[in-house]
Image 1 (cartoon, one colour):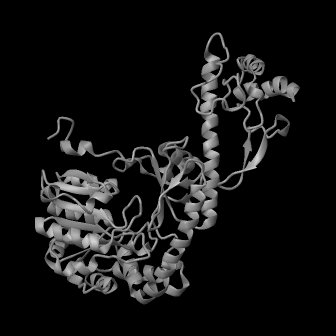
Image 2: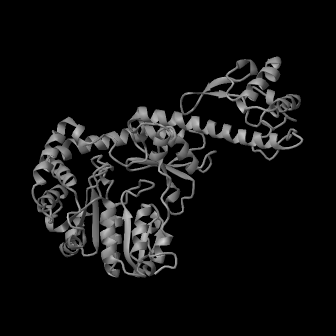
Image 3: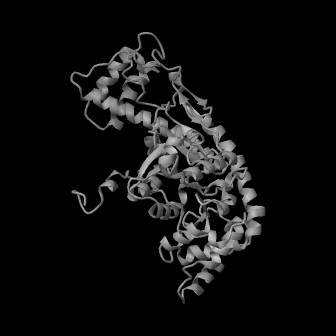
Length: 492
């Protein structure tokens, strides 16, 4: 028992979840319906219940649930596993399948059934941080492997591993492993008695299907995870399946909690899979086309944001490198959340630090709004930082200009001998073209105020006059107006 409480010592190493962007937005007074979620990996086309060709009706599900309340549900989920087996195909039978309340529930069951204290678990660095949590709770020791190294993992490391867990496409870059690479890895896992778990939650959005489901029936060291939540845009209904050989599936069906799917989840899954032909022939192809077209537009728009670098993806999101930008991933996601726009902060992923965000595909008009908001929050952040620096200057006695900041990579940005006390103009954006400033078109779209032709607040006499006004008593907003009227207007 831990000295700090009743819990095991190893659970203390579980990382704290990141700040919840949705909660930040709601606390800013933004309604739930006004939030645009670029952090979710759910199908951007929307659910089949809103897709006319699928002929699905929510009222039918509620009626089905109502009829199921009068008796104990079937804990074997016989009907659901049979219809799911037909949907996944590839010689899969009901006995190969066990249902779960989301992907994390599958992983929890597998880890609790397989991993013992001290066992080594290999995770690729793009795994959901929750996967690490379940490994730690089970007593396993996590060893992270970069995506490219999984293809050529050393025999020494593989021989130590009890289990390898990877996502395909991977959960960060959105890259799709080839079928030949996965088959090769599986063969090596068989040689070392290592369980290979492949999470295919996002595989339905990829243009090419490289599912490993067809390898399940004749391999004892393979388990595939499939989810209905993301594929069919049902974030509130965590429905997933583990697919493996009959013996292992039987064990996991014993390990799972009784009635682990609620009646609503079961009824929703049955209704969805009842219209398999419509899903496979109309809805899923339309989803892939939507993802492909809107992903290209998303990449084009984000790549035009100054110092943003996008990575190619095979699925429904794009990884963006913001390491050269003025905001790190933590501050950027927080400021966007305050405007009701949620993107995924990747700092909780192994070795990613605060350098990346993940942005999911959405309709073009949502993408335009996001890119415009990014420009706004960058300016807001610069203004906040400048005001903080200004307040520090004003707190000093005596208040005096700082002089030229020759360490700045942009120095000199206007002229030799300039004063850099107001590197970021406290009046920005003044919108007054008498200063020499003007509105210019952003490469990412929209217009932004440019001070390139204005050097007024860099003139030493002007800086001193502004400081004389700003060091007086009063609110900053009042002092800035006074400084503009008394110092700037006479210059214009």
